[in-house]
Image (cartoon, rainbow, N blue to C red):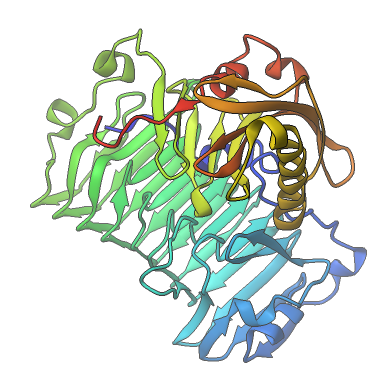
Length: 467
């Protein structure tokens, strides 16, 4: 049973620390108050060039391939980088309708970039559009489909969200959202994540064939209503989990919904329970008596209050480490890892920095290898995610955990004024130099005996597979 919060709950809290370039929220110019206009488009480039406030954009039938329009940018359109593509980011829009003809599809060929990010804005409607990821079978898919942050009055009508994908829909700090007549399918992390959202209605929709850990995750979200919606053929741990540390969530309800052929360990987690009214239950692992027989134990009851740290083994890189269970671990492409603190203020990030020469002599070449690796790691962050890292060596190379190591300290910078303290441990394993870097908004969070120091200091040689 999974009780950790999904990574999405921390994406917005420490977005730049998470090495995802958030789009800047463009101020809406005074001209946005002008009369509403209508534009008709037939390609991805035409679509993005037409984006602006106070307008209706009519999309002709066809596939709008995002990768064909990476060069289109404006005050409202930008792109967030991922390892194998880019996320389309729309910022600061007001009073805009995107209306597709039957057969209109917004298509991404990236497995690790969200299809669409919506940052800020109000009165945005997507009507009759399919959000589609089209990738080869061997492409790793880790990103979700649509991510919305700080939007008000965002609506989806007659839209579909299909897999493979992480969360088809992720919502953060939004208000007054409506999703109706939608099809939500193929989610691998769940069907819907809602964090700090006030007012969300999903109605007249179908949620089918998603894996959920949980399927519906609501964090500090209230006024959430699922109405006349069919949930069919979904599976996982908890069907719905409502997390509220602040304890103000009161209104989460299912009305006139159908639950058919779903297979979950529990219908609901135990923090806050939803209400089900006039719903039909058929062939699922829970029924109308779910409140008596299908509510998960609390984390403390299930594991015990004194649960020790979690343990992760990275067999490819040949190392292992420990971390507190309440931290969120996310695996990425190229063997990379990210660990997020519960408050979103600290990130621990792992990546391979560079390969070593075939005849590496640690005694003679170790110090130079670490210096070169630190530069390679700095370049990797700059080139791939636009993060400027400045570090200097702290002491001499040393043996610990079965590895040759070197420590570096410094500062990370993104944009203007966005700074974080940084500590980097480089270590040699399996013919490569790897980097475990800790970033924190408050430098004190990286001091000796801090949790970040515990995680980085716990690195040791990986056990044999199967141990």
